Image 1 (tube, rainbow, N blue to C red):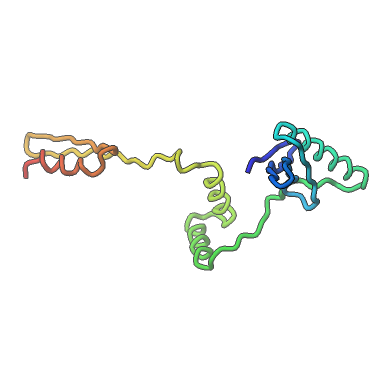
Image 2: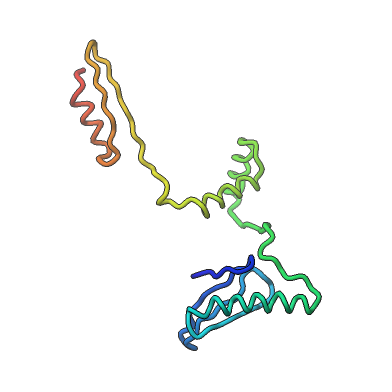
Length: 154
């Protein structure tokens, strides 16, 4: 789903095939504020108009507009995972909030494709006067071990 952004608010961008319109709603507020347009090109403008109307309506009603998200939420996990997280936090000398924050940060900001899991290993073998140095090649995997064994005299 695409997300629209304007004035610290986010909104959805959806296609309604039954009514043949683009539509959405402002996210993360308790009030239901929707908008729609005949085409995707007009949806951003309708979203911005809906946000402006929401802010103006709140002003007229004398109430504070809701800000998206407070930074607090409840998480339901298994008791085993809860215990493991608390134990690890205790060992690391950090709070459970720190653990959850780091985990969510990694989930949101670190994509698996961006992580390089290849490990390069260099092996130097001394056999009397002869020294053999072999370097692993992640592209060929464990074959370097067979190469090392073939080149070293026991």
